[in-house]
Amino acid sequence: MIRRIPFIPTVITAAGILILCALGRWQLERREWKHDLITRLAAAPNLPAVTPEEFRAGMMGDVSLQYRRASIDCRAGPKKPYDLRPGSSARGTSGFYVVVSCRPNNRPPDIVAVAGWTKRADAKNLTLNLDHQMSGVLIESPYGKQPNRPRYMLIPNEAIAPLGRPGQPRAADLPDNHLAYAGQWFGLAGALAAIYGLWLRRRPVAPAAKPE
Image 1 (cartoon, rainbow, N blue to C red):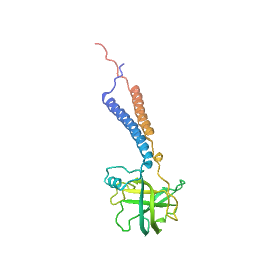
Image 2 (image 1 turned 90 degrees about the vertical axis):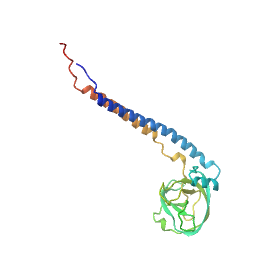
Image 3 (image 1 turned 60 degrees about the vertical axis):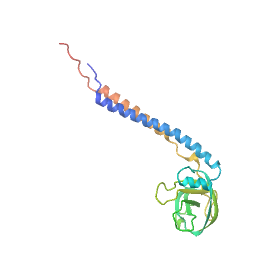
Image 4 (image 1 turned 30 degrees about the horizontal axis):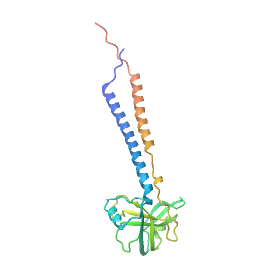
């Protein structure tokens, strides 16, 4: 009795195993990249405050200002918030960031600031007196690639009354699940190999050719 290995199913299975292993290796490479990114972002707040030249370079996309410290002069007078976004207080309580534009006109801002934190879902109807020097940490692309949206958002150390202090972003809070994802891909590759091996064992065995 001869147990023959089918060619086409074996090639397809081998290709699937190789693809799954490649995805697992890619996740391990992403993990190294993420660790390097977290290290750089953790050091960013300790760098000197962003200069006007660096801000212009950041607007052009030439440098990254993520988690860098910066200050803006917010003298727009009485204004309603630009936006309300999910965010945590300095004590870690969930709620909303009250985001404001410091421009005195209605032109699309290139940077917005978090005036503070609140639990009120209707805080977008508040009128805040924007007459402050605000210092804090910059977040890049808070609205992704949406057109006519700010490129930066400043999360300050202090809040504008009557709002509470917003939570500061930390590099350590960035998700780092790449090792688990790699384990899943390698596990799927192992499972596929095991299933195919069992399938081969249970296949009917071809009878040996009789001698003439």
